Amino acid sequence: MRIAFYAPLKAPTHPVPSGDRRMARLLMAALEAAGHEVTLASTLRSWDDGRTPGRAERLAALGARCADRLAARWDREGPPDLWFTYHLYHKAPDWIGPALCRRFGLPYVVAEASFAAKRATGPFAAGHRAAEAAIRQAAAVVTLAGHDAEGVLPLLEAPDRLVRLRPFVDTVPFAAAADARDRHRAALAARYGLPLDAPWLLAVGMMRNGDKERSYGILSEAMALLTMLQPHLLIVGDGPARPRVESLFAEMPVHVLGQQSLPDLAALYAAADLMVWPAVNEAYGMALLEAQAAGLPVVAGRTGGVPDVVREGVGGLLPPVGDAAAFAAAVESLLRDPDRRRAMGEAARRVAAEEHDFATAVRDLDHLVRRVARTGAP
Image (cartoon, rainbow, N blue to C red; front, side):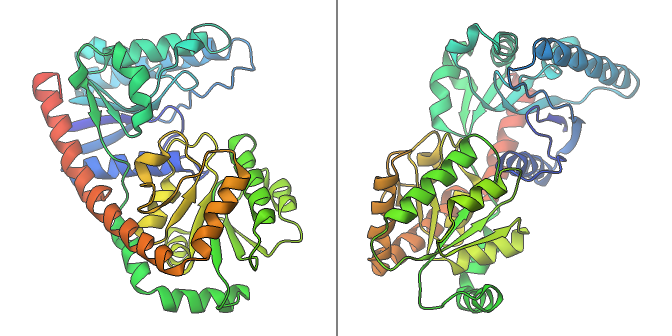
């Protein structure tokens, strides 16, 4: 089957790494692994911060021109069998896919859509209308985070058009890193001058303004509240807010490692003792899932789709989001109980392999798109 793929918030080819880019790439790879021919339809980024008057209208016009160019190509070469859009909401609507699907009679599938009625007026009104129309048109909406379902479900023609798919990764390289934990820990200790007999905490997050920077702020407050011998914090991430983030952890045993390759990140997950991320307004957190696939238990803020990825009391602890004291207490409770921490890591790895693996997503997505293409419904 020929599938046109589009990610309006951030294209899979975008130069800046993020969980969004990672999931877009994984979805394309999963569809390709199922035997489909997947083409990136457009790299137009439709994101609107709501601060620039007329931006939504300009983006809509750009989207219309992109749609016209694609339509001309499809008139010559033939259209695909299905359109697949990843991550659609009022700040990043799809200005391209719905019109093309109407023109060529194609099934329109969306993964990770969200809808908030309160955005019907104000700076995001145009994007809100476009997102609503796209969701209503969808033959299927794949939800990766359960909390999105409440807003999306009333817009669908039938409840069965909402399809659950757990966030997923290729768990194999992370499990392999976990099996080599001692080797990775020794190598990282030598590389960064880390004490082998002290606990290592790991935080992974882009360093940008807004929710990411707020998450780092809560993490620094929590670190200051730890009463036991202070662990070493390893931070993976980079971005425009890096100087401010680094200043939050002044005088603390913190090592900012910058951006890391996936193999190096897998080694860090495997070697660390606890993953820590306050997760302010996190959709679900790809890094939280990757960490667990490597056998690393997690402490994360309970928000959004994080509970869809981290099972409370199984693979980690989920204190209330934004509560630095509760976060510190959760971290300290696991640092003081290595047996519980070890058991959580083993459980997290098992659950990731059983419920969040790439192979499972390949099977489920293949079933979905074939059924939608055949019947127009999941």
